[in-house]
Length: 303
Image (tube, rainbow, N blue to C red; front, side, top):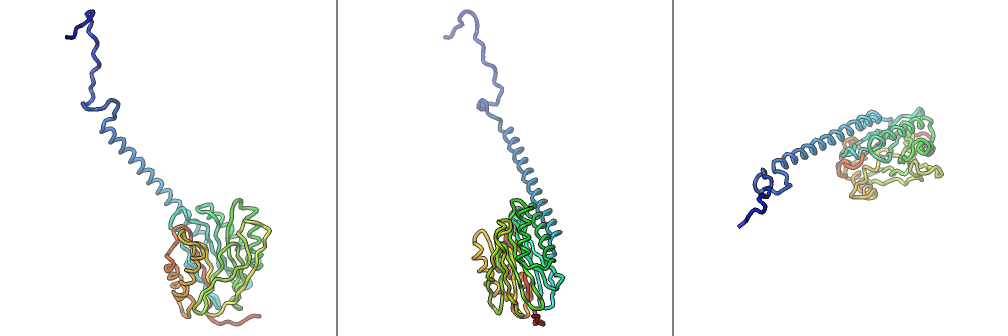
């Protein structure tokens, strides 16, 4: 028997009005569902906002680059050659880079050809690409040899573009003599397709733009024959995460032969499309630029 000592009944604990079976301190199930829904809704909005930002950045980057570069699908017909370009942007917005090309007639009748690649990705690389491309095109109008042009361009990078590096290959094609004179700055050498075979030209000396001012840029030349095809390209054409540049070049050499590039009467534009398809299509991680010069017929020779 329980009694009361001193005539005072002990106080009872406060009534618990929570649902039976709930654990003290636990959050009700309906509250958890609401909170989970709010978190998912917030995550969804943030993902959509990020997706929209990425899409807008890609749109702006592509628009800026299209305003800077010449039309990539356009072909140029010379007295004894035809020039065509293929430019494929990276599949991922974050991988859009500073690849560029140029094909412009010079006052003396020669054709200036160039392909280059600025390090980095996104809008900063596009802006630096624009500066280098316009500078080199302007310098080319002096008629100076390609090695001198790259020396001047290297000085610009070293003095005006801090922490920037770039590669480039450029040259003059004389339609009358069919002589291609060229130089390179840390860039893959052109590929020559001739009589059913393909080889990469031996590169003259030349270091990456922005690396040093103490090393000169050499010059090489090759006389192109009727039916020859010259391919100038950026490393996005030959390099992939799963293979190095050397393996990629070998793949291009094989594809240039098997796709019929350089054969008499071949459609140059269709051939370039087949070449890109044969090597696996566009590179999702880097831009791809391919400039082709097809020598079409015999012409008068100049001494």
